[in-house]
Image (cartoon, rainbow, N blue to C red; front, side, top):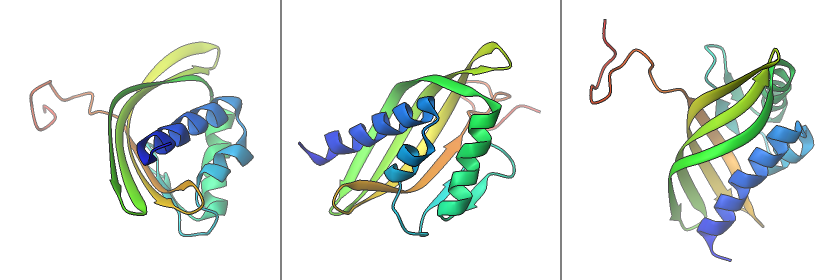
Length: 139
């Protein structure tokens, strides 16, 4: 199996674990040391280390249940024992008995140990007040 396919497999493993609310499987996708970080879409979502990352996922799981990750535009660049993924996706979720579709953009940094492990994940939502083809949100 080639590196790009192995990295795609980590994306699928993340989605499967997240939808199952399997925090142990989710944490296993990340490097096992505290040199990991995540930035979420919430104003306070800046996390570093295993304990903080586990808290991020626990909070997410309490607020909603993801049912599907729908992958869109994807770029995977591999540099020896490190890789960068840029991806857009839609997370389908159930929150307060309502179905929602949340557009997300990710940057994921991975390093090769015995397998590919995530060391950083940055999530953002597209600017809703910004017209297509424009660089900045409208006033």
